[in-house]
Every structure is written in structure tokens, then in C-alpha cells.
Length: 70
Image (cartoon, rainbow, N blue to C red; front, side):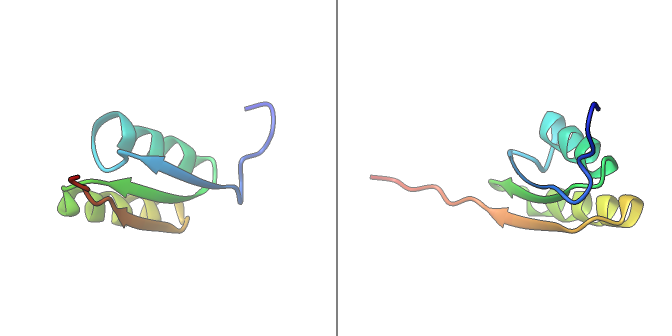
């Protein structure tokens, strides 16, 4: 990176699995605190949070999305 991302804060949507989880890991490795928005897989989101906080020492919060039906 051409500049430091340490202490930056990010919101990553769809972040509990797959590509979103990899994005969370990459930014956490750079020192970012992250809000992870996920839809339904609470177990995967909590597992990712524990992994990232333990490995990289950054703050992670989980935000569960809600589906609105009109």
C-alpha cells in the first residue's frame, strides 16, 4: 500500500463468508478496525470476528442486516 491504513475504520458488507471474509482479513492485516455487515450466517460472522481479532488485534463489530418486505 502506498499509505498506511492502520487505525482506519471500514464497513464491509457481505463480509461473513467467501470474498467478503477475505476482504475483512486483508484490511485487518493492515490494522483497520472493521464493521462486518452480514445477512444470515451468524455463526460464520462470529467465527470470523474471533479469528480476526485474535490474529490481527483489531476491533471488529458485527451488524446483522434485516430484510424488509413491502
